[in-house]
Image (cartoon, rainbow over all chains, first blue to last red; front, side, top):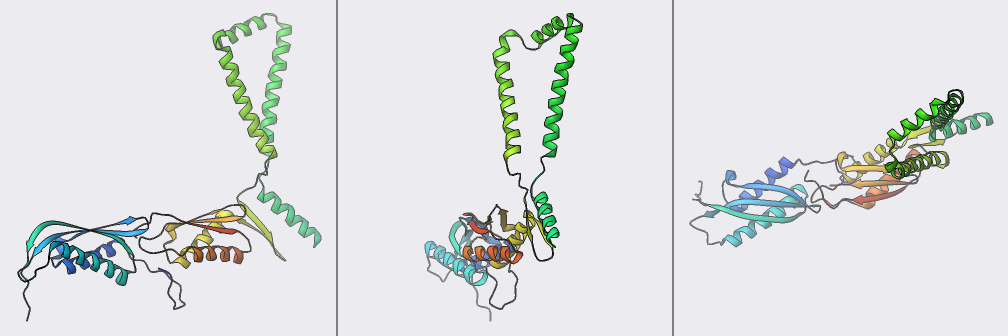
Length: 109
Length: 188
């Protein structure tokens, strides 16, 4: 990131750990599974960011969404979120499904 | 005033070029030692005729007749390398990694490493990347900046070149900037 237009010099640094937590949160939101089930590995791919996400298949009662659609949702969410929140261009998002979780989503009143 | 200028010029020239004294002293000492050994051996041989025979026996034991060709080739190669080193020392400009300039009142002598650090700091600040991701090397008339990008953030290499050349200009030296952005980056 370049120094902003405010005229004050300084650099903004986002640590690898913070980025990883951010990507984990984004993947969790899109896959709708608990945070502890999501594993994220960040790496470099020719100057761009590569995000490898491992999530379980979430079996919910009310959603008729296929696994492939779910993966696409995770991909879009990670790419958009990383660009908007961290200013990073993500080149590749690998989504890997491992395991199955039965999720019951309840409305909290 | 004029004498000051002359002194400045001489001092700066002395400090930016390496001295040949040590190489010359070593070469002269070795030559003196070899000549002295030859003279002493020759005189001793004249005074005591047995010495020549003993020396021949010792030489035959040290280098057997079968190895003569290989030994002489090796000796020739060593002498050739030594000669090349000495010629390079004598003819080469012997520049040190420093550069100098004079202003109205003072003469400045700056290590290349200091300038390289200054350039790297400026480039890192301008591009908003960590200082450790920038490496700078100073050539005679160029400054090479190698940048390791942060994954997913494009590096503006024109801005980096501008920062490098403006830093050099501000310090009073001129160098053509060359920016190379590495293909692989680091996550953070």
